[in-house]
Amino acid sequence: MSLLTRIGVRASAGLSRTRLGEATVVHDADGVTAEAEALARSLPADPDHVLVVADLPPVSPLEVWKAFAAALPRGRRPMRIVPGRLPREIAPHVWQWLADRTGRTVVAPYGTALHLGNTLFVHSVDQSGWVEFERDKGPVWKGKRFPRPAWDSVEFGRVRAAGFRGVGEPLTAGMWLRPDVGGDAVTTGRARLRTLPGLPGAPLVVVGARDVTDLELADIAAFCRTLPVAPRFVHYGGVALPGTALGQDLADALGVEVFCYNGIPTGPGEVLTLRQDGSLGWNTFAQAFTHRPGGGTRLAAYRPPVDGLSEVSPGVYWYAEDVVVEVVRAGLWIRPAEQIADPAGVRSTPLDPAHTLLLYEATEPARADHLREVAEGLVSRLDDETRVATRLMPSTALSGAALAGLARTGDRPAPPAEPAPAQDAGPALSQESEPTSVLTPEPTSVLTPEPTSVLTPAPVPVLTPEPTSVLTPEPVPVLTPEPAPPRETGPVPVEEPAGSGTPDDDLDETDLPWLSRLMETMSMPVPARPSEVESRDDRGNR
Image (cartoon, rainbow, N blue to C red):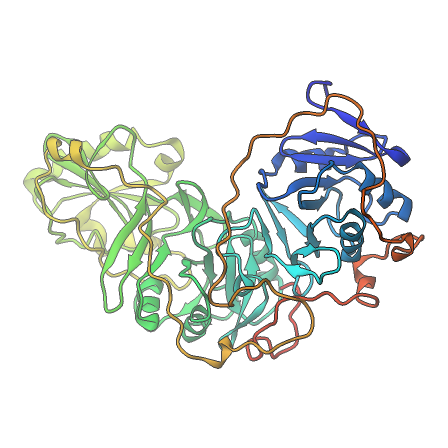
């Protein structure tokens, strides 16, 4: 590493600090470890805290932590400390000692910090998360995720019951609702779902588990009524549905419009199908739908078939002189520009996880050959991965072959989406239409919880919550990068922090105890939990 990108500042006991990306790494004389460097460079800026990576063994003697305190960046700003070595888990009384010694606010993980993408997700023990430590004050829970999305509240931070037969488990992106069972199927599902990227504006609620018993719709609805914000739903496993589709049944049960993905969201503009074996398939064109109580489905998020097409109306693109291509749940539909009716039921054809259906309108034999030629031309323009998964077929074939490929447990034919309003499909209109965001749908209504005893928390004398109502979380700013501070260009005198006032006896001279031994000597306040929701024994890290 060149001197232009790495500036070390010597500290007592052989510790140094090095600026890497948006973080300052405090490390020993051997330099920054590879895992700490990769972590530091991946972290986004924290506008409210000085971001520090502690590149030290989790169990270190007192003298090392004294040197760590002395090597910290100067100033009075609050600090966010991230353990830099695996396992990223340090006894929380270290952070209280550090806050007392430096006189600065310290935010650090209580539990194991999982590095998933550019997110640090703290989830290992009951009531784990990011905790704020201050001198002469009790610890305060500050969410489970960094960067912290606005929706990161207590409701999305704990393993808790979902109705009578389900359980809700925190994920980086939100919550996973599944049957209250164990086994390899749950372990496999957890490993797959933990890496789902989170959205700053809305949490994901992943529904169901594969290869286990079906989840009851009533349990999903009971859990959702406890949430302070409207989530976006992902259908992952089996659900016992009274109707035809998860999104519509949820809208009817909750009495509000719901947003449901047409697959597994894995990144911006990417919603992949879920195959029978649990692997991910092709990137859908129709990526999400909203469903209204009593019926009514609207395409809410989608991607264009190919670049350079003019959009006539949401999800409908001008393709040839008299032909448009429409994004539908199962793939794409080539049809005459003037045709709005759907005699073959193309819009209601369910998704095939294995294949993209490219359907051309064939109810009028005189025009079917021309529309097939147009569809064949479109196939050649699709990206490679989509083209391999594409099956070209006439709309009149939907009675059997297209439906035979359904492979996901719990899938049923979906109700037809509302067609786009009839309008002249000429090029002039497409010039005026505004581009529709692919994965930024219109806001859906917040779920209004019904009165229920689940929402009445019982005080538990463990961890102090933030000063905010459970159902009215305080606004949490979305973290945006701030200008990096000036690079240190020379040795900085290291001295004991001013105003420490904390005797060394507050920390044992021996190795700091591991987290598993912490609870014998320290009580960690966490937010009060709902009494009925968590009345059963803690389920641990499900």
